[in-house]
Image (cartoon, rainbow, N blue to C red):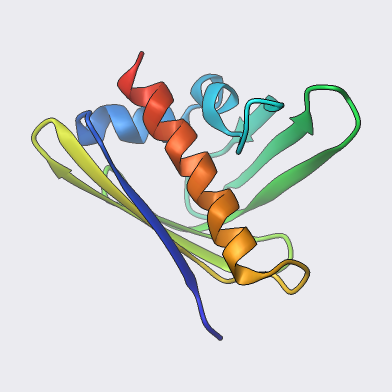
Length: 136
């Protein structure tokens, strides 16, 4: 199966990036693909076999969905891997270099939407993370 890759470089230490990526009080601030969506709740049991769940919702209340899975690999400040509820795999690497951190997300596509749309959506969320992390 072909995978999709999105990436960015955040102007922040890997420790800050890791914290903002994993702590629910931060996840709710950045986990949306556009300004008309938000993340009202996030839960994270950040360990191997731990579960996470993030609710993404349209701000106008017209639609929401939960995004969740189970961690299969957690290496602090370096790597996290998880399996989504629909059995797709996700791998996220964090490469710190002083005051910059490169994030690379590799994920299995789903079958409902075109790959370009999925890539654009995940990239938009990653860009939202970058903006939030660099500005707080």
